Image (cartoon, rainbow, N blue to C red; front, side, top):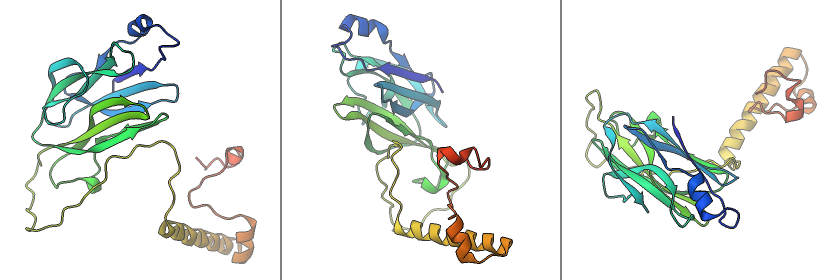
Length: 239
């Protein structure tokens, strides 16, 4: 992947001329699209490009755009700072694929990122070939980076049986960012963890020929195999 990197610098710290000379516009290579956007804590914006699984992309392109319009063949392919030093000036290039669909929009806050790429089989919209999520547009906002995500739908390499008429349509959420914040675990998942814990405790007790209760008191088993940093050196099997 080839990264596109911008650094957000306050105009109160650096002069506009210095900012303009320090930040150069970068863009994806031919037949690549942006599949990951990271907004670092220090204000840097990084966009990573990857090859598309089908079709072609890269030209013709238009420069210095405030946005890459959704209902056009043009998609986000590069960026640099606009003359005001606050907004992004985008490079928008044409993307020609058999089928492209809009997935959704999301905000990438500081210290987080959005990552697309090849879609897992279980998450596909259709039953054809490869599906690939990418960032088709981006905009700097007060609370973060607004991104728009589209999906490339490649044709199936093998015949696919048609679905019966009236099949329910699955509605999916807009793409979610990953910011390192722990996600609340559902009650069902907690229950499965508890069952797994009890099973491991019983196995441990049986192997040591000791009662289950005493083994549970000595050291609860964590099914996630997580240990605090201070104890990792004592357990080489724990990642």
